[in-house]
Image 1 (spheres, rainbow, N blue to C red):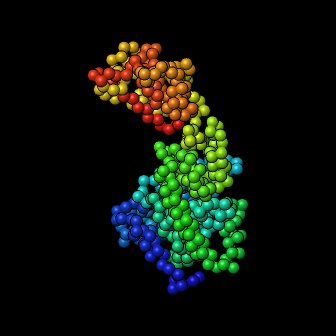
Image 2 (cartoon, rainbow, N blue to C red):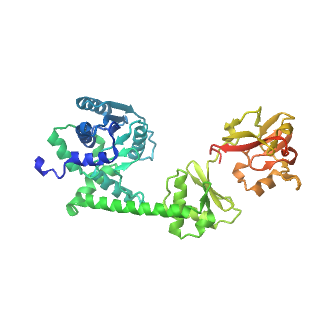
Image 3 (cartoon, one colour):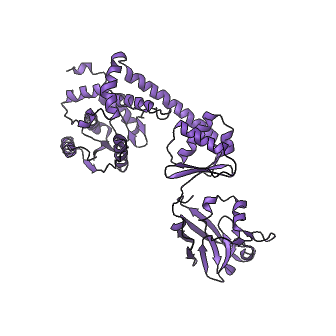
Length: 447
C-alpha cells in the first residue's frame, strides 16, 4: 500500500476548493450515494468538511432494483450513513427497460430524474477523472458533436462534482488510508456494457502507451467545451434576426453556410426542448425546409413533435392524434376566462369601451363557442363582402393545422367573431358602447 506521503493531492483540499465557490453556510447538500468506492470516499470527505464549511449534509440512495444485491446495498448505505451521522433517503425506482434500449442510459435517466426531485440546495455527485475520460471516448465513438464531447462540469445548476480532477487511483488510496469499506456492483465487471468494456479491456492498453491519457482527454474535453460555447454564441447571434415568436425564418436559414444553418437549426430545436439530431439528420431536415416547393406540406417527425413549414417559417408543433369533436359547443355566461381543454387553450375575455365586440348585440341571443364545420362566412371588414373562413384563414396566415381547433364565437346561430380572424361587421362595437375583447391562450398541445 502506498504511504500517505505519496498522495498526489489532498482530496479534502480539492473538494473544499470546489464547494467554497458555490456553497454558503447553512445550505443543504445531498450526496448521491451508491455505496461504491467513489461515493463512499466523497461521503467521507464531505463529512470532514461539514463543520468547517457549515453546510447541512444528507445522502440519497437510488435503488434501481436491477441486482439481487440491491437490498444489501441499501442496508450498507444506511449503516454507513449512521456511522457518519448523515441522514439517508432511500428511493426505490422502476427502470422502464425495453428491448433495444441501453440499460445503462435508461437507468441513468431514471436516477437523475429521482435526484432532480430532491429539494436540497445542491446535489453532489462523485464523478472523477476516469469517468471524464470514459465518457469522452464513448461519446466520440457515438459520433457526437463538440457539445457532446464537452467535459462534465464541476458546477452546473444544482449539481456539484468536486472530484473531477481526482483519479480513481487517488480515491482508492484515500479509502484505504481512511479504512473505508464499499460495495462492488457485480454488473461493473460485465463487459457487454460499453463503459465496462472501455474500462476493463481498452483503457488498460491505452494506459500502457499513454499513461497521462486521463489528463490529456480532460484537456481535449475542455477544448470541445469552449468550441461548443462559441457555437452557442454564434447561434444566438444568427437567431436574433431569424427566430421570432418561436418560429424560424426559412429565408434566414438559406442565407447561411451549411454549418451555420445546421447550427441555427440545432439551436432552434433546443429552444423547443428537442435533443439535437445527428448531423446527417440535420442536413436532411435543412434540405426539406429549403428545397421543397412552396406549397409542399413539409412534415418532419421528431419524436412527439413535428417540424413543419408554413409561409416561409419553420414551426415546431405538437400534433394531436384525435382532433376535437366538431360538435363541440360551450356556453359563455360572462366568465372572464373559459378553459377549453379539448382545444388546448383558454379564451380570455375582458371589457373595453368603443371597440371589440358589441356586448349588447352579442348577448341578444345565447353566446356559444363552437368549431368550424365548413361553409362558415364572416365579414370582418364592413367595406368588403362576406367571405369564407378558408379565404380568411389564408389571408391572416393561420396555419392549416390550427384551423380546426380555433374557436368561433356565436350569438345564437350567427357567427360574431373568429379567433385570429376578426369580428363580424354586424357585431363590431360602436365608439359609444361597451365592448368585449378576446384573446386565445394556447397551452401548446395542439400547436
